[in-house]
Image (tube, rainbow, N blue to C red; front, side):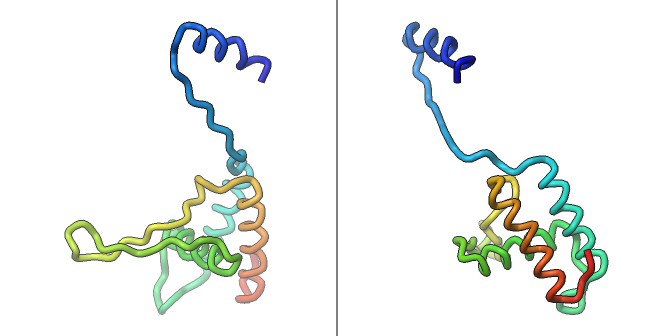
Amino acid sequence: MERLWPDIKANLASGKKMRLEVKKATRSQDQNAKFHAMIGQIGAITRMAGSTWSDDDWKRLLIDQWAHETGRKIGRVAPSLDGERVVQLGWQSHKFTIEDASEFIEWLYAWAAEKGIEI
């Protein structure tokens, strides 16, 4: 804060408008790498509905299930703009806080163990 104050003060003194946003820190790069590696391992050995899925597909499926099981607001589906498809709107990992990422990693371990998947 001490490093920011001189710049903030100068901008305010010169009449510039500013917006200050304070929010929780997002996930770390280590957390990001960890849960992406775990999702990759799950996707490499798991089939769902008789099909294999990309890591990105697995990430969406797993985040949705985690959000549901942990009582977080789950995304919703909406028709595509041309009305021909369904689009999933919801949780995205880049918005995870450090706490969310930690909980998701622990949930991935538990979910995989429950399904007999060793990661």
